[in-house]
Amino acid sequence: MTNEELLSYLTGRFADAEIKQGVQYVEMTVKAEDLHETAVQLKETDETSFDYVFCLTGVDYAENMGIIYHIESIKHRHTMVLKVRTADRVNPAIDTVSDVWITAKYHEREAYDLLGIHFNNHTDLRRLFLEDGWGFPLRKDYVDEIRIVER
Image (tube, rainbow, N blue to C red; front, side, top):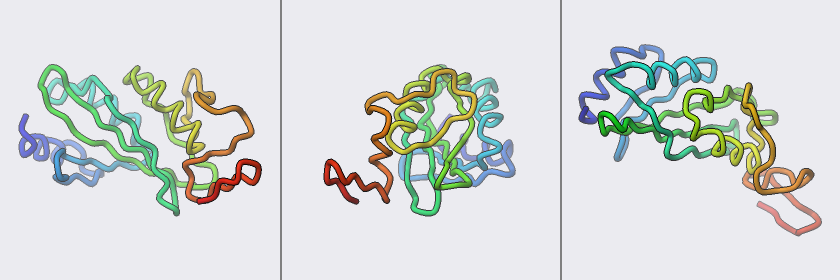
């Protein structure tokens, strides 16, 4: 599908989502409670067949946390961006999509390690790079008195 065709298809299929043409890809923002079901539909529907997460980015938006998924269909050769925001910034949590896209497993661990975003139902959610007690160094409010790091 071209970006225009994908935009039209997603707009008709996901009425509750915010969908727009971004600079390079079609971008779809969903509510946190709709993320997992949306991911399943994007993967299992033949028209989309998004079978691969090639990038997952955690974002600190100051008022909440967000996750941005770049997903691709190897079968159809189209790509899109799926976005979601957490309801709580202090204890951010969102459902895992690692059971939908296995490549999300380590990406989610990285977002947990560096931003403290908890992924509900993740099978192996633990720190990937840092030791326990480090805090979450990519948060905008991160301060580390021992290592003298401030944001």
